[in-house]
Image 1 (tube, rainbow, N blue to C red):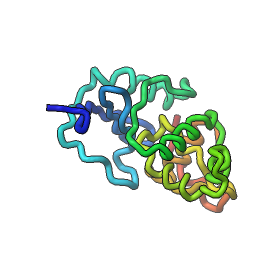
Image 2: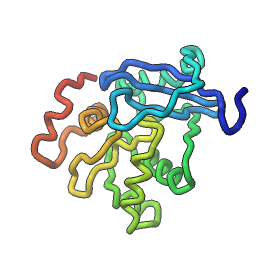
Image 3: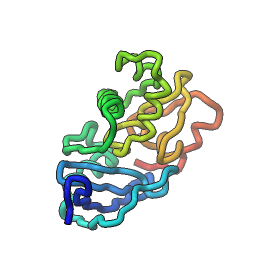
Length: 180
């Protein structure tokens, strides 16, 4: 039996240029999107049901994004998190396609200019990779900084969006194998 505390989660895995992507929904919308071979542990999938049909509209938008034909997502999202995390995730969604912001700029946009570390922590807990574009956040010096999928995937996503140069020696080669 599924209740509010244990909602029915349906999922599928799609192939992308950056590797396999786990996509999971609950009754309200997207609950989790993450690269299978990323740097952070995936959520427990106990009780989850693989359901390709239920995931069709979500997978379709992600395919369109990876093909370079979609710049913003319209599917419903239902990530679990604290109010501050939700505020950060909304601010991430406000970063336009093809642009980046630093953690400090994001903190300032939230009216908390001294909270860049807290913003970074909330960014790192984003359960909707790609959809909530945490890959668009970089260090204040222009360097690529942490990403749950790994820096190579972060750079590949930014390159897909037309951002090709980053500060820091050696960072150009991170996504050399990415082909949109």
